[in-house]
Image (tube, rainbow, N blue to C red):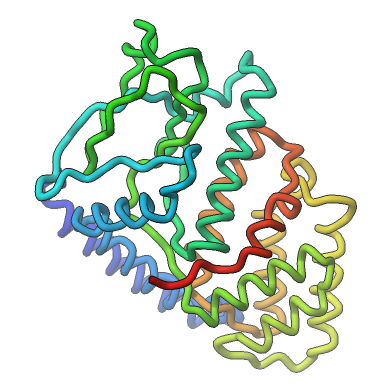
Length: 310
C-alpha cells in the first residue's frame, strides 16, 4: 500500500533533481555527464515504481524469463488484488556475516552474478534495485520444515503473494520490489554487449571507438589521445583476471566518466540504470566471494545473445 502523500513528495523531489541537474549542466565539462537526461530516465523509473500495477507486470515478466531457472524465483502477484503476504526466507545480508561457510557464500555469489548477467545480456530486462534488502535466500539450511525456518519470516508489503514452500528447498534467490526495471533499445544493447566484450578481450581502443561511434554527442578533438587513455584504463583493469577482489567497478567507471568529461564525449543516459545495477551488486558479490571472475562468468551469456522477442 502506498503511503499517503507519497506521490506529491516524489514529484517535489524529482522537480528539485531536475532543477539541480540543469544548473550543474551549465558548469564547464559537467554537461558531458548527461545529468538532465539521466534524471529524466530516473523520473520514468520512479513514476512506474509508485504505480504497483507496473510492479505486478514486471514480476510476471521476470517469472517468464526465469521460468526454467530453479535457482531464481519471483513472488507471484495476486490478480486482480494487490495484497500483503508472508514469505519464509532470509535476507541475503545475513550471509555476509562472519561464520558463514565460505562454500555457501560462493554459491550465493555465483547465483547472484549469473542472475544479473542473464538479465542484462540475454533478457534485456534488468531488476534495477538489487540492494541486499531486496534479495532473499532460500534453501541455505536443511529442509524448510524446521521450527527455526518457520520462524524466519519476512513481511513483504509490495504486490506479491509467495507460493507455498516445498518440503525440501533448493538453494535459490528470491527477488522482491521489482518496481524499477531497466531495458535498452536493441542498438544500445548491441553496443553495451560489444563494449563489455571489448573489455573482456582487453581491447581498450575498441572500447573508445564504440563509445565515440554511439555517443549522443561528441566534441572530442584528440581522438587518438582518447583511445590511448581508454586503452590504458582497460589494460589496467584487465590485468590477469577481472575478479571483484582486484577490480572495483565503481572506481573503473569513475575513471571512465572523468575521461569522457575531459574529451567531451557524451555517454548514452539510458546506460545509467544498467551501470547502477552492476555497481550495487558488486558490493554484495565482493562481500560473499571476492575471487569471483566476472568476465569468465559472463562468457556463456555473451555467446548466447539476447532472447528473441515474443
